Amino acid sequence: MKAFRRFAIFTTAATYFLIFLGGLVRVSGAGLGCPDWPKCFGRWFPPISYRHLPPEFDPNLFNFSLAWIEFGNRLVGLLVGFLIAVLAVWAIAKYRHAPKILVPSIIAVLLVAFQGWQGGQVVLSELAPFLVSIHLIIAFIIAGLMVYISQQAYYLEFQDTEKEAVYPGWIKNATWLLWLMVIGQVIFGTRIREAIETTIEQFPLVASSEIIGKLGYVKYLHPLWGVAVVVLTWIISYSILKKSRAPSPLAWQSAWTMAGLALLQIVFGLVMIFSGLPEVVQALHLWIAGLMTGMVLIALAVVAHKKER
Figure 1 (cartoon, rainbow, N blue to C red):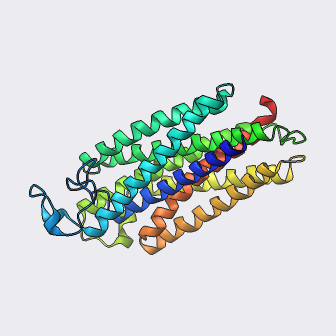
Figure 2: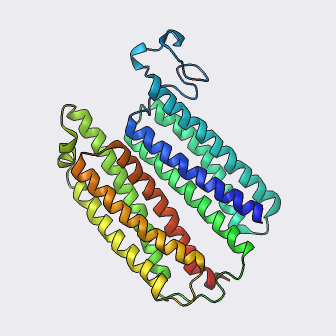
Figure 3: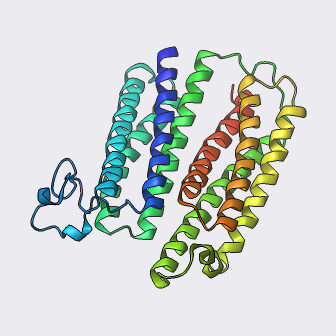
């Protein structure tokens, strides 16, 4: 089990790295760096000069940097897909008796296959905002499954880790609510990004500092919902740390990490509001949202674990 748990954790980290790369691809405008699928300008590797372009491709569409950024994202995606497939085969071969590992492993590998196909549709649609958002949400679901598998492997290896822990009776339902709110916040965030892209298309000369002012009601809903998420996160984290009896090390780690990620989201949100949407900050804001969904899922499994044993 130790080897499987470590491999699951490595795969989880690789999945979150891929999410970060995907965010960089989106905010850098590299999504169409390779305008075809699965090849890149008709080649299995991006061209390194204009003379390597097939005659049917417009040279004006070729950007060396963007092509290699997008191609690198595809290569990492392929590697992560392979890791998840190995994890699923491992679970089928060795852990058929553990449905909390077997079932999410199978679901994850099926979602990876769908994600690969759907990524091609995103490119062929020329980055239709709705399809891009669906691609992101599926990535978060896959990452959540990896987190869950890693944690369940940990509990199989250390079965008495929550033996002495007692958590407040209300905290399980509150953590469920927090997880749903974080997912909702991610959806609102994708709506914000869609609105930004639409605004840039409609007003190509508008300054980046003025874009948020043109987003409509969603520019208020997203930060207000975010404040609610932060408040509930801190209430739950404080309760795990101070109102629980003998919380496990995993509970401590998840509580402190959730509180820290919530604080970082506030900081990055304020930077984007007052600094004109810096691309790197957008990517970090998105990535931390993904980390937050996974960490809340860990906390949820922690507070629910004793009742399930």
